Structure formats: C-alpha cells, structure tokens
Image 1 (tube, helix red, strand yellow):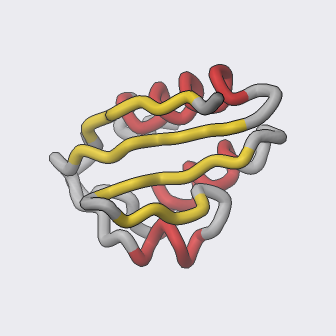
Image 2: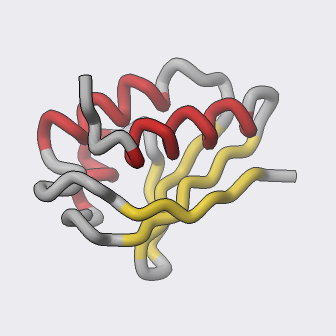
Length: 88
C-alpha cells in the first residue's frame, strides 16, 4: 500500500537547485521509498539528479508517492514543503 498525493508547485522557479536540495533533504528524513512523478515520469525523490531531471517549474502539478513505514508522514511533510513555496 502506498500513499500518493497531487500538489501544485507554488514557487516561481520550481524545483531547481536550492528548492530541490531542501526537498531531497526532507525526503531523506524518512525511511519510506519516495518518488516524484510528472507527466508519467517517476524519479526517486531522494536523488538530486532525478528530481532536477524532471525540469519542474512553478505552476506544475506533480505527484508525491511514498511506500513504507512512515509513508503518510513523508507525503504530508513533502506536500507541505512544496505548498509553502520552500519558505524557510
């Protein structure tokens, strides 16, 4: 059983360099396997190159998927981070 949630990327630059780094650091706090999906492409949310390869820009809708012991917490936390626009 996995948890999947759709989220709209709020910040203008999308998931590039700094925001992607924050995203990956947050993903790595969880034991679950976590993926980011955009346009039928799925990458490991714990991989900087993977996330950057999706070319996610502001206003893009992505799916965050997690599977494991803390899957719900992982998805909720990453969705909250994306929705915040990566505000520190």
